[in-house]
Structure formats: C-alpha cells, structure tokens
Length: 441
Image (cartoon, rainbow, N blue to C red; front, side):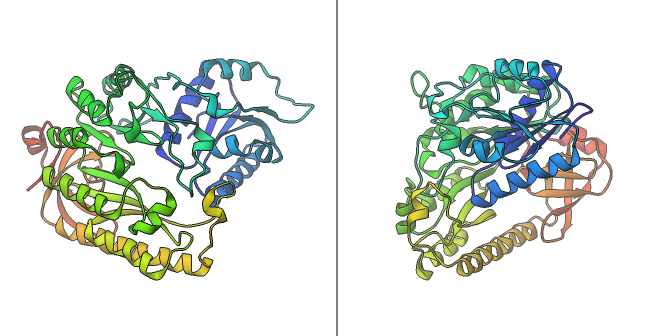
C-alpha cells in the first residue's frame, strides 16, 4: 500500500495489516516522505526469508527512498535486517506504533554515515497496548481493529512471543470508540485482530472474557452491519463466547481455529492447551447455536515425531469438524524454539503430508460451494467485481458494484475456489436486505 510519499509493504497476519496502516498515518502526521516501511513476519522460517526478500525488492524498486524495517522478524533478528544493503532504520515492535518514535525518526537526517539505526527495545518489558485509532483503510469495505497483542503461551514451535511480548489488551471502551469511528467513516465490516485474540481481557481489571467484548461491540454499535473475528484459540472458547456468538447474527458465521494438529500426542508436544475431543465438542456446540457457521483452521503438517497414524488423526479431524478454509503450514524448524531440537520428519514427507492436507481442504471447499448453488446470500462488495459472504467465501459478481455496498446475490455456480453470484434487483436489495447479514434459505 502507498501514496506519493509513503509505501508500506506488509507480510504476515491481519494484525500486521492494521499496524502498517497505523504506521503510515503516524509517518504522514510527522510530514515524512520518500520512505518505505517494510512490516515483516517471523511466524515460520519461510516467512522470515520472504521478509528479507521484500526488503531487497523494495530497495531495488525505490532506490531513492529511506527504508524502515519493522515487525516480528526485525524485532527478533534486528542485526540481520540492519545488515541488508539499503536499510536505513530497524524499528522494534514496541516502538512502531508510538508517536514519539516517529517524531524522532522524522528528525533523523537521510544520510547515515555510521550505518543503519537500530531502534529495538526488549518487547518483553512492554506492559500496555499503545493506543492508536486509525481513520480508514482505503476502500469502504472492511477494516481491522487491533484489540490485543502478544501471547502468554509458549507453544514449542512458535517464535512469535519473542517478537510480540506478553499478552496486552486494549480496554473495551477504546475498542468500541475505534469501531464507532470506522462505522461513521463508512465501513460495513470490522475485523477484530490480535496475536492471541481470545485471550483478550486477561490483563484488564476484572479479567473480562473475549465473549464480553464481542457482546459489547454488537450491543453498543448497532449500526455496524458485520463483525468478523480473526483466528481464535479453541482452548479459550467458553460459554460466554458461545452465548455472544449465538445472540448476535451480525457476528459473521465464520470462525478460524488455531488448531495446529488433530492428534493428542502431537498437541501435547506442541504444548497446545486443547485435545482432539475438545475441538470436536467445541465445533459441535458452536454449530448447534449457529447452524450456518463455517470453520477454518491452521494445521501444521510434519511436526517433529509425527508418525503416519498421528498425521491421519489430523487428516481425519478435517472431516469430523467439517473444516473448510484450511491454512496448511509444512513444518520447518524455527531456530530458538524447542521444536527445532526435536527429532525431525524428513522434509519430503513433510511436503507430501502438507499436500494431502491441502487436497482434503480443497475437497471440503468444493463441497461447501456445491451446497450454496441456488441459495441467496448477503454479501459485502470488496471491489467492483468481487464480494464476500458471511462464511468468508469470495463471490464473483455479475455486474459492477461500489466497494463497501451490502447486496443480495443468488448463487449461480462456482469455479471450485469461489462462488459466482447473480445480483438481485435493486428494489429487492432495498426492501429485503436484512439488518443483520446472514445466509438466507
């Protein structure tokens, strides 16, 4: 994303997308220009490699601009990124949303005689979430709101806590204010984001649960048509969350589970806090209160010590939980994590298992798309030609639309990846579009 003065390059998660926009606004507020902000990701070894590639690509594309590198990979390996030719500043995660940090950066001279400047603090010392409200995201479809950062858990494969620090939550009132402002600015869908989203509230007075936040937003911002949740931890889905999900149809019926595996022994070796049957029961409960819910999941293929039988348990949970939108990660050892020291699965077998999981996911997607033929959906136009329904399926539109408009479409077909929708007559959209978007029979 960019304009005439600032270009942002974002890798990784939705939280990074929010933070890139926030940094762009902070830089513009300090009248900075001719800069490139590369917001890196460290979730896997491959993500860190792609982050380094992105920095080099930006230097070639913008040879006359100052390069600021930030994000999780830069936080964890600041010297490595500082060593890339053309990098001017490495900015840590604790500072990247602090107005004072950008004020100091704006005063630095463009030339650095002594090499790049490294502004990286110990992220584990961060005790609160920086307050930053952003005005918008370019178009008027969906916007991200950061409600939480960091993680208190130490999964054996994950390096992210060392890039993000411990869990910190934004106060509920601040979140509601951000949502209200974005709705006033024309956004029809808000996506709540965080590193460990469902741990929201654990560090706040009274320790409110994430379900409490969802209920507050839905209740206090009735003019918001669609509220979507990013990845959630099955171990943190409690009765309060289920009640909020059941009570508010404006909470989109799509939940992406941080599942990682379907075998109990592998889950224990990952130091996850749920077991296979916990996830199956949680999906059953959620589907009982919202029959239209569609689940996505993160799954790791080839975790150390994974036998064929253990892998088959992960493969079968896709069917048992009717998981549809899969994010499959072939395991690669991340230096500094316990899993990197465990007995590894041969890389060719890791890739083969990842391919099998992806094929299973593709079959589930095609099955879901088949069931939508002839139904009517409420969708949000994300561009002039594409929209997205409540269950996160992309819909190809038959006629140009204004991004951000909510419409009704009849599903006429699909191409195995996305639905094709016929836009219904305008008077039907005006008269019958529900206040709370949902799948219509």
